[in-house]
Image (spheres, one colour):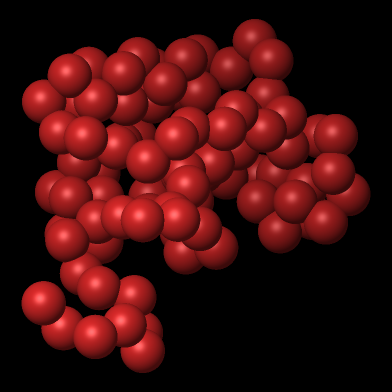
Length: 89
């Protein structure tokens, strides 16, 4: 998990976005998570074009973890999988 980061692509007044953020905060009490950055998808034209219709979107580095609802099992799996090229422990 060394230099990993989570980004939650959201937009203001989005109920699903608020639900995913709350679920992430709840999960963080049980599992150490990388730092979380909240990104307003409408403030970046590239992100809006790629993900604007699918918010919220959770990214681990540049990998899409899930859309619309938190997939805690997938996030946990990705956090436990070493990055490509990393030496196995």
